[in-house]
Image (cartoon, rainbow, N blue to C red; front, side, top):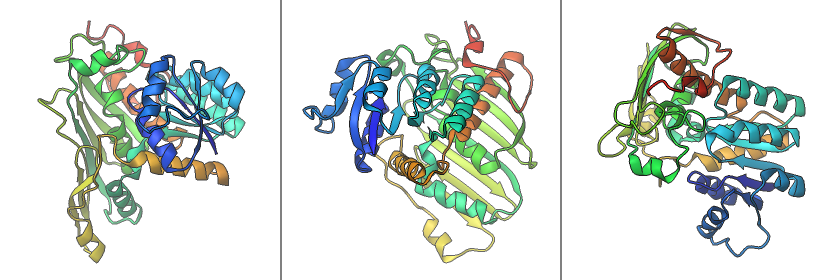
Length: 358
């Protein structure tokens, strides 16, 4: 399957590794900075591979090579524009989080992909973590009984050096703040586990230590789910001196689970009213990861390839991407209006937050 990568920055390493692990035919890479392409290829010993074309214009790349699958790993603010152009040309996509920066653009991606029968996956790869898959199965098997509440805590550190590497980070137009960038994977997991359907969100955000940015460095929210359960979100890049944890809690009448580690990759607590032999094995499970992005990209790529070949929806589809984005934008809107936000969210964009902390 012919594959092309659009954007060769920090997260592109995971996309390239996943493409190689899945034996995709890498036909091209694209970035407006030529040195970024070469740096990325060199990490995998591919810098001298003439079969991999280099482009600084993704539209020309798509026109010339017509890849079956492409992934978008650029700055977030141009995800939607690139996605819509690729979908129009019939290219199946993996879009890095967030899928878009406005709810309107997310809806456009979903609608056009349906119209063109193009497969689109939002890159929420943590759904494939071993611990997360075990939790999901327990939920689907009804082992929790009635859900009471759940929470996600993303307690990370991002210092000035991180933002100096890429000036678009922390801007409303191209990135958003801690919730949109660092916390959206955890937010995706919480919403997915708690039943997806949300009635109302109340949130508050602040810019405590990163006054050189436009966006927030800490955010909190309370979510009312339609099934009666309650969710809470805590996300920040203010933890000293380094990343502390990304932790997901789910509480039900018959079960309690805590998934911890740096990227929801370890089972810290696994308690159910009826314990099985499998439960005993799950307790203390740790999945080794080389970085905070976990191991899920390879599995996500494999799933999308299978979805293309068998004409089915990807496991993490564009609607999942919209759902995670909707939560973040609803928290932003709640901060801006100082009021709860009813869902579904119809119109809001990260750029509507411009000037919030200035």
